[in-house]
Structures are given as structure tokens and as C-alpha cells.
Length: 134
Image (tube, rainbow, N blue to C red; front, side, top):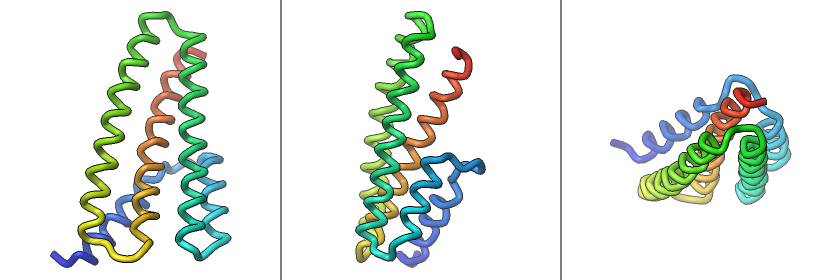
């Protein structure tokens, strides 16, 4: 299979994983990326988004700690630890696959976008838990 076809397919899948409803973090990232044509600067925009999603996760976990019972919170923290392992393994696997078929600097942006999406999905999932315990 042509390596450029695989790279194009990977980018297409990543772009289509976006949530239908834009979040302010997504909007800020896209506005930042739209202002540059440098892949390095685009990567910095995605890093800011990643940091924002991680901060969102921490804020939600803090809220859940205050508003849920201790057993539920223990389960959430255990789940979070498992998710961290999943995230790290998933990113490692994706990057290994990606570097086999990539040339140039754009693959770094694809990799960072993949990481942002994983963390974003976790933040949105935790937000659902938070909605149960307002």
C-alpha cells in the first residue's frame, strides 16, 4: 500500500474525529493555526490546546472530588490512571506507525493533533461525569 495513501487516510481520520460541536479550545487552536503557514508554529498552537485540555481535565477532576462521594471518586481516579496508561501507549503506537510512512515536518503536526484529540475526548468524557454531580 502506498505510504502517501496511508498518511492521507490517517490525516482524514483524525480530522473527522473532531466533535461536531466546537469547544472554545478547538476554536482558539484553529484560529491560531489559521494565522500561520509554519508547521512549527502550528505545532505550538496544538501544544497550547493540549495544555488547555489537560487543565480542563484537572479542573473537572477537582470538581468531581468536591462533589462526588469518596467511593465514586476513587473509581474515577483509578479510571484516570488506566486512561493515562492507555493514552501513553496509544500515542507511542501511533507515532511509531506514523514515522514509518512520513517525511518532512508535517507528521509532527499530525502526531500532536492525535494527542490533542485523545486528551480532548477524555476531558469531554469526564465532563459527562461532572454533569451527573453538578
